[in-house]
Image 1 (cartoon, rainbow, N blue to C red):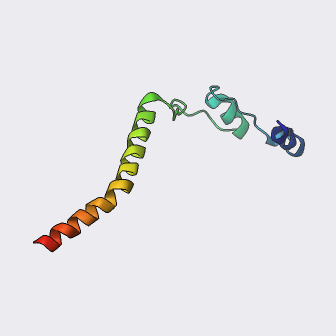
Image 2: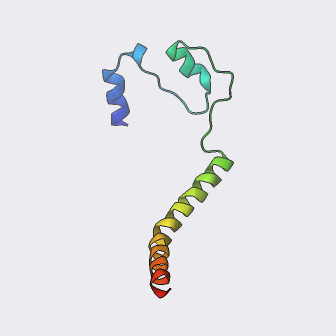
Image 3: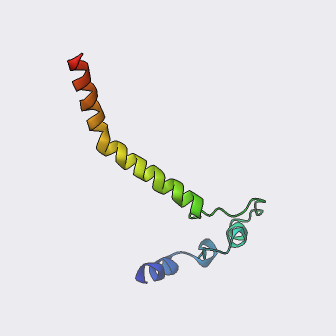
Length: 81
């Protein structure tokens, strides 16, 4: 793609890391001259995380759409007592 070629043209090779997903800590830590962490490389798209994100997104959407109804319902209740 043209954007990647442009970046390769303007960034000196010693300052450019073309990281490939799935290669773990090794290439990143070597590029940064850091030791590899003992913990496993993070995977933010694992099944449990994705389920939690979908749940939270659904809950947020529910709150957005039902929030005004709750406020109106509370107001009607307060007026009726």
